[in-house]
Length: 325
Ligand SMILES: [Zn+2]
Image 1 (cartoon, rainbow, N blue to C red):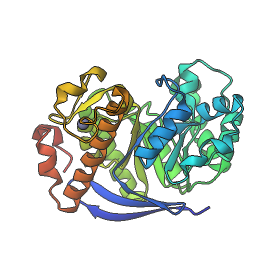
Image 2: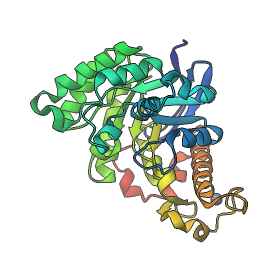
Image 3: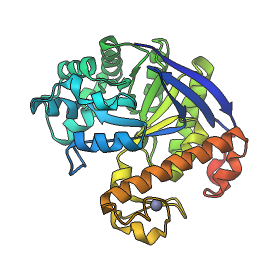
Image 4: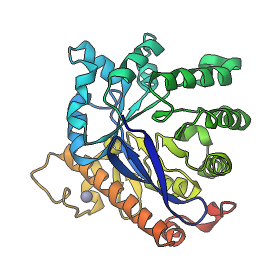
């Protein structure tokens, strides 16, 4: 299996950047969005939704927990993602689902079994939630990251760092950047209560990495709001995932999230909104995926042309950006 290679392509204002990821003969240009599939939200089977998604988005995220659950129904783990070999697959640890379903049987051993067998390009570490480890949170997190890396390799394992305190986060970053990882993942909500705090913490993480391991990319977990994507890209984030593309309708006119039922109120004329033959649910999914893809392409072009700041100011007032340029 080929390793994970990152190439810097462009940089612009603040920490905005465009990189190219080459992995397993496939490539992605960042910033990019991994639409996520999870048994916590879908009314479809996760395998059907993954097949649908695989046709419409190159990057995608699925959960180790859901692959394990499907395997109990008789489909071997190594077979489940076979049809998606042309996609770039990010495997989540399954801690989100096991916590959601209160399943205490989701152990590291089961996670290891799935990570070893699933046809994914990269995978998240088995994360430790702050409430699970109390005083030993930092040691437990680092220990689980190292055990997760050992399942495959530091090239393709993405450490998930939950933020309890500012100092703990930076201490963990210091430790894991010496382990040769290529990407770190931060849960969006833990970066702060307000978008200002989140951007400021993220910007600081990016600067910290720039001073030690500038090739390390930052993944933001659970983020799909277009305005947040814009601001986090400005602060130095590279990749994102979320379930939002299934839950809301993105309004292209003002980048807001609307209720799932509001697609026709957006007056969008994209090729999916104008296709009466499509079931409503598919129109919502495809409208959202197309919008995010085009929006990120526009951001990439503006970083290339060094016009990202004026692009951003169309949607966000300048005070938000203070201290990050
Ligand atoms: Zn549309």
